[in-house]
Image (cartoon, rainbow, N blue to C red; front, side):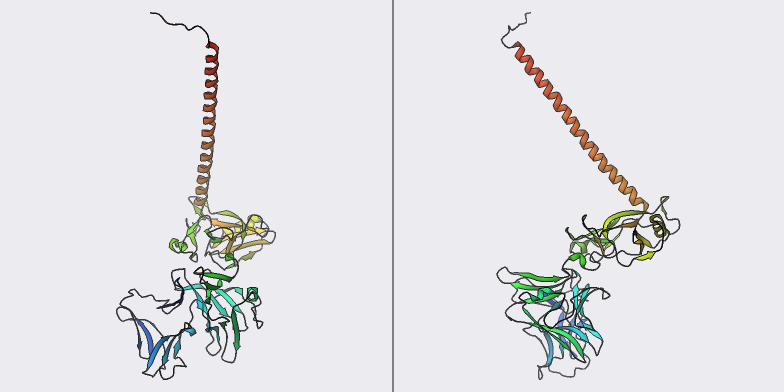
Length: 421
């Protein structure tokens, strides 16, 4: 069950009821009021989704979609106070009049959660939540890693969202009482169609519909750069802000879910092309695992510092632990990583903050790299040889042409000898 704008030509979904449990047959499923609840039934009459209200006793209920986008279940005799409303259960879109906040009685958040990708409304990894202890918003990855903050509310704007000063069309208000704290907003011009979304890109965005171009216009997004989004490229994926697509797999790895990557959902990350063989002998075909050099990197999160005296000792420390997947060594010391590498970023050549990361790979990956290098060198040498050969042929042809012309000039005007039999 979904909800979208009626006056927007591009279908734009703002709310989905059963985002965790899609129905398999659109034509035989039903939405009914049963036992005081709104219930979505499958073709076999199995409940797929419900408002899950336990205290309803009225027999005169109705479900109504209001003009502000709020889908409500209410008693027809008391329509001012809904028994249930979609505004209390937002998905990825924050509509005017609804609220995003913290319920102090139940110790729970009313939050925005991204879609999984552009086509799948299932809950994604990113959420926008109000800090329970202050008037600022956080964006979290997997409900655990906080990687962006709006800054505190100063009565007019969020301190770290300066775009709110530029002809802002929203009228925000903050409420904080003994039961809850939340933000809500309205539009200064009600005829404007605008929305906040927690995008599957991991960015919170404000968009406004333009009637003249029939498209959504992005007013601002945070974080500003895609690669600032935590773990955007997933495990063993590296983000590059200056190229498209933003995500690529490290050498020796491949995308785990190709279909998702084609939908710009990189959260599944990358997996090894060749498994490590270090359980007993740290060898693969008689060779030890080795480390691939990746320069100009923003290092992954959660390093573990190791006290060693040299780069060789740092490498050895990682190599001797089968769980160690990478290391880095420079003037700041030795850092090693265990398990998945997250939040990797490839920096530009002129970025002085880039560091070198040594990534553990199976020995066979280096044989492949050597073979590939040999193929490239062979192709280059072969191409050069062909060019040289063509050059020699051209030189011979030109010399032959000059000789022929010279001979013709030497006999011009002379007597012609005829043969006689």
